[in-house]
Image 1 (cartoon, rainbow, N blue to C red):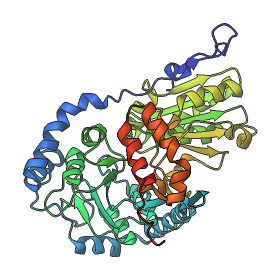
Image 2: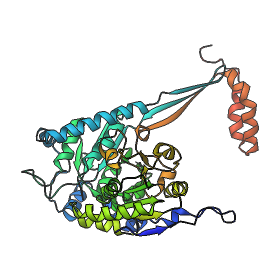
Image 3: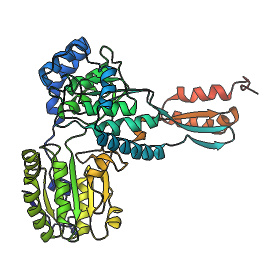
Image 4: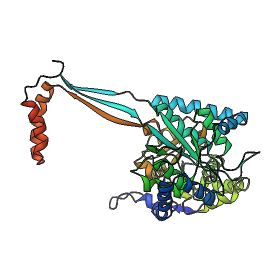
Length: 449
């Protein structure tokens, strides 16, 4: 099921150096630019016609006829009342653990005294209003509610709007046109009462421009399909975005001590998300590669979403990469920069410490990606497509801005003023220097003197 990519014997050489492993382990095609021509008219239409346009797109794309985009507070409350107690307990524990790690991330203002009367303070200020997007298409990702809301709340964001696709088919006697009831229940648990039944590109446009009851936001976060991501790219600058997340991916670095059953199950767990999901095993053990293939044949047949998983595992974005040793394997996974990276080696902690690029790193046999998806206390909104080499996952820091506050007395300005004037003249910006010189030559008394 998994194709083989044999990189044995291709390590660094004195003449040519290391090969470009990133190009040798391909990913799924995810051309955000190709979808811009689709989402541009949608976003323009939402900007110009607001709710009327949104409702038309909900009917067209989601098959749901409606008259309003706002979810009634009564529906949010009812969802929590009717939530399965076991699901509620799982959500509450996930929230508790995630809130603990988010609170530990909170940073204090940093004050730097550069001399008498010279001070720079870095203030961390939360974003005023954010819009959180929760996918509801292939699967109702209730866990994404927690992963977006909790860090925003801990950061101190004062206004939070959440949106998720209206459902055509919902359980029990819930009427069509609302987000999935489990998503609404999670909103109720977290105290989120501004919720919209809007998905896709039109949801991003609603948050960016404002429409009807939804005021425009300053920042949009949350994963989505290619059209949602394309809308983020199109509207970036009008609104802040967290990232352009593509299909989910897992890489597993493993040696012959790894349990083939565990490895196969973890590859399947991410393939279950999307036919374009990437599942990559990097190993120096041919025996393990063969055993994982055998386990995949057995385990995939027993799963619910067989066709989706088979498509993902057999796609160009998935495969088993054979390497000479774990040292070369580390070079491969660092080049690949996976969204999720698992380490199943004899000394997993030591090998994990050598990883530079990974959205989240799962160490040892009892830390599967599924744990991070729900209840590890980590955040599962992570950089994809190799972006882990330069970007971080969603966190409290995503919802705050660092602002420098500069305080200088006359004496402190006098001490450094000539340097400012000299550098301004070196850049042929004499007005910059003049703004300092006028103060140095002034006899105006300093405030409070």
